Length: 169
Image (cartoon, rainbow, N blue to C red; front, side, top):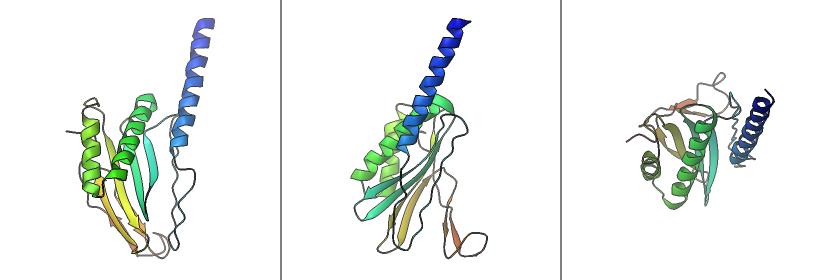
């Protein structure tokens, strides 16, 4: 019993450490853009999870990522880190959003199990022109709210155009 208790404590410490590392991958601060409110929050249902969001500085533009990998716990957290890293790497080198998603998919599809995939919404905001372009890889649609909130204003836009999830050939 003592050995089982020690092993359980060790696993619990490792999960706590992994959760801390995962939280460090989330943006620490929201981007500050004149005239635009940016807000995000991610609360995993377990110690570790597959949900994530990210902001990527792209010169004068801002990359916005919202994603969710299938599953929970350690495998989901590891796959989330892979998806995030691959998408970030391609976003910094490629301008076309479709190409970023396609290259991310190609990079991940060779290293994933058949049951692993991620849904990813990736948008690029140009604060100067106030133009938002996006590519949706199987994720729930994003929502743009203008002048208020969804409840108080009919001026919101559901970004419903989408494509296939990431990690699927």
